[in-house]
Amino acid sequence: MYLEVGVDELVVELCRDLIRIDTSNPGDHSGPGERKAAEYVAEKLESVGIKTTLLESHSKRTSVIARIEGEDPSRDALLLHGHLDVVPAQASDWTHDPFSGEIADGCVWGRGAVDMKDMDAMILATVMDRARTGRKPKRDLVLAFLADEEAGGKFGAHWLVDNHPGLFEGCTEAVGEVGGFSLTVPGDRRLYLIETAEKGLAWMRLKAVGTAGHGSMVHSDNAVSELARAVARLGEHRFPIRLTKTVQRFLEQVCEAYGVEFDPRDPEACLPYLGSLARMIGATLRHTLNPTRLDAGYKVNVIPQEATAEVDGRFLPGLEKDFFEQVDALLGDKVTREFVHYDIAVETDFEGGIVGAMEEALTWADPGAIPVPYCLSGGTDAKSFAQLGMTCFGFAPLKLPPELDFSGMFHGVDERVPIDGLQFGARVLDRFLDHA
Ligand SMILES: [Zn+2]
Image (tube, rainbow, N blue to C red; front, side, top):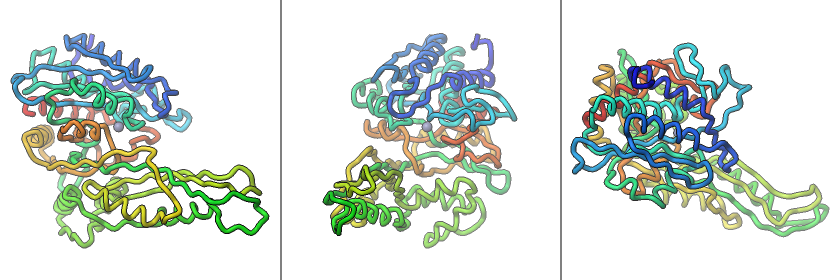
């Protein structure tokens, strides 16, 4: 039935259907998993003659891979990837049920509307329409609809890269989230933020070991106090500003769009121009570290032998060593650290044929478009694919109304995507595949 409708209708239907399939991922396999969504995606692709492979790293942790032949199979292949899982949502907090895919106020509502069932739907709608009309992409395409991104990709992208690297053979570039969205600037122009860098991730468990004892006695070796001091030092530390090439270029272009001069000695002066994006971009000017958990003891009159805490650290590309030197100096010699989860930072230049194809497609669809590179403060599956040597970009094109708090939509309540933005995205992606 989908073949009867145009891409504009198709992309909206696919996005709504995907939202209705609950793929909440609490991070411990207790959720519904991605199998149903993976089967849905596979069925849609197979319906237009695209062969798919389903792979499971764990019961119901399902990813879908497909390969589409391009006009020139001798060229390197391009990977398009999206994750199928979403973070959980508490329905009572929402205006519309987060798993209903409801349409209201010109938007599709629901968990995953921007992170990232919108892009999954754009990829699907575009390749289905191209298959139906016999339009081959320029070069071979690999499609990956992935499990487990919201828990770090251990049972999704990382697992595939470690266990089935052959699926990505020949892929030199990868396109996924979080980028391609617009930020309105003066003169009816829009910056489109294309992700070319991501901070690295250091989730760490800290531990202090002292001497156990009775709470009534004189005691000088208390693990709880030791740990608390270290956590406070880390939490209050403000890492100095370090401008990476991506962040500097982005801020220069923001200033240019506002007709002001960029001052490298005061890069934070640019942040107010970014509106609600300032909190995310502000975190890419420096390393960050936030304490998130504390645990110690079992009874009020017992001094425990150890105390632990967890902290969420994010380091800038190229400056990992600098980050850990500062962390270790602040921890002191009585508190140790280990990784709960670690992942690399990535950064690539904003140049090459694929960037030209993104720029061309955006300015074709929006004459007021100014494509710019930026650094994401968080992480995506791009980290896994970078380990296979691919150059990674976040490019899920969306033309957004100026008033929408887009970064607040990610993992937020009332997540929603404007319908015309979604349709814009499918058109841009299709055009991009003509030239990429
Ligand atoms: Zn995401």
